[in-house]
Length: 105
Image (cartoon, rainbow, N blue to C red):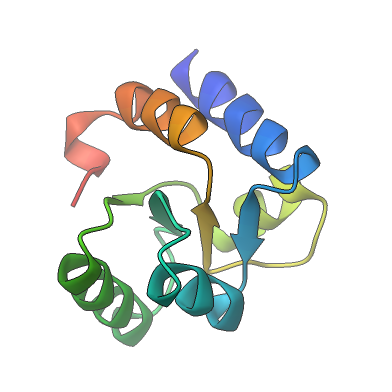
């Protein structure tokens, strides 16, 4: 199942230190040019979604909506996470290929 593949890629990114989680860390990764993909939880607030979609649009970083806050946190072994950024180009490309078109922004 594609959701399992996406979860595995996110887990690989976390284990390899190529992932930022939480709003402040993700914002810093985007602004520093490290983020290759930002993933926003489906159940995050409208303000959070708007903030990161606008920011990523400005910095030309792809954005995907995937999972819920609890699920994203669970994948990386942390508490609830509204957003994460994948900071490795290869893993980001693999995730983008597996996220269905209707989940992309």
